[in-house]
Image (cartoon, rainbow, N blue to C red; front, side, top):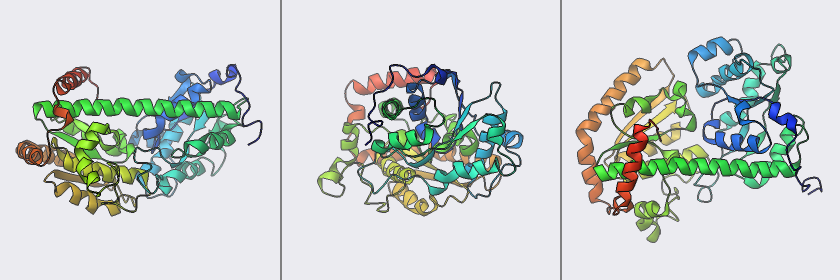
Amino acid sequence: MSRRWFAPAPSAPPAGRAELRVGIPRVLNVWSTHRFWLGFLVALGFDARKIVFSGDTAEEQGREFGRGRGTVDCCYPVKCMSGHYGELLFGQKRKIDLLLSPMIRSLPSFLNGQVVDSLACPRVMAAPENIKAGFMKEKDVFAENGVKYLAPFVSLAEPAIVPKQLFRALKEAIPDLTPAETEQAVAAGFAALGAFNREMRQKARDILAWCAGNDRPCILVLARPYHMDSGIGHEIEADLQAYGYPILWAQYFPIDADLMEWLFGDDVRVGKLASPFDIKDVWPSSYSANTNEILWGAKVGARVPWVSCVVRLVSYECGMDQPTLTPVQKIVENSGTLFFSFQDLDATKPAGSVKIRVETIAYYLERASTGIIARKKRRIAPGPLLSAGASELQAMTFSQSLAGGSRA
């Protein structure tokens, strides 16, 4: 390493950075890594109040800001990015100075170390350069609007190399950036992401404790992070929650040691699994980060008694998800758990069919949940969710969060 790489950071970031406005498209894997980017930028001296995310995906957004900017891609979530770019370029009251749209090669995951790799979908990884072309096919719209376009190639599953990747990509755009402060900012970004993930998992545990204490069902959603976008996932989980069923997302399922021992301990002891996070028994080709977590989530949903229903969300012609449809369904249904899959979302306008499907799911949940919970409880010990005192405290926490309108 050069001396410059290990040079000490300045005592304070240059004041000019705090005046810069940064726009980040709220798309794809930014949904699961946004806290890293916030923590990273704030640590570099950017003002958090001047870091702007685009809104949720919407048809109006695409028509107003993305018209004529589209590029050829069969992935609907990628196509929608044109509207997000346009919103950040043309739809702000105060213009942005930097548009940051990272090309994320690999993702941090709680499964890392137990899977072959943690890669992002290649189409998703390359999407920023794909969409950029739509804003440069006739003229450079970014330069015309005084915006620097940044699409750093970054491997977030390999924290040791991230500082070097980001320094090389950002040094020309960020005043007086040094390798040392980049390294410190990356550490701050990972710390912020870790804290956020722990908070979300604690909220999920509170939900599970409430369900266990009250013998009530909940729904586990298996999807990619961007299905949290109301324009991509169509708020299917919110519609189901309106029927009174708490919602868990597999990405934020609690991974505390006591829960993992309860759910997977026997399989580990007999050598069926190397650890609670081993998925080789159901998915040996474990290269894709989001796919890995979906398969692991299916195993969890099949084991937890109070998960009486698993819902799978898949966007139109998603080549990464198609091979997993049957394995996931078999894992869930073999446990007697209800399984519903929304495949090919956005192949057509789905509002009417989604409403009917949601009503169908709610109907079966009402009829079958009590029996499903009872049968699944007979196959597993009571576990830590029903330990004396713990469930009461967690149930109280969850009830308070419901009253406050929060959602895990």
